[in-house]
Image (cartoon, rainbow, N blue to C red; front, side):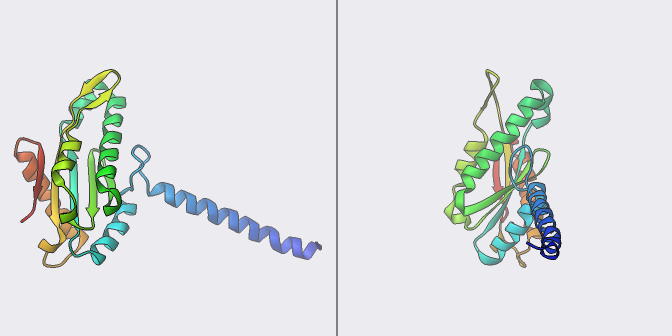
Length: 183
């Protein structure tokens, strides 16, 4: 290889490595480091795509009940274990029918392709199973708000999240457990 060819290839290799590193960093930035779920940015793109393509889609907002108390009483490791367990349960429930994400703190979100194809009671049951951590059985509870896209005049993610949030707070008002769907 002559010197001119080598001088041309070296910068190209550098740019290829740099591009690969940036792509990896972007992918990492769109995943929550504790749960492995999509962060708001990563989840939003997927949710908007799913909403456009599936008229029977629904957006869910999940908030852990009494999370601060669990964290304060049993420590941050137990709190992280609760977040991971919630993420795993939400991921398993969504399966190939949807995409879960973590908005931050103890708030999770999901979008499913077809609300009639999923069992909300099984999600609620899964989110209320105790967490076995450090030799203890810790109670978990969550409130779930659901917004079927078909209930919206204009099917936007922003409106769906607002409606799911209102439904989630209504569920919290009903003994802080369970799920509620917007009407």
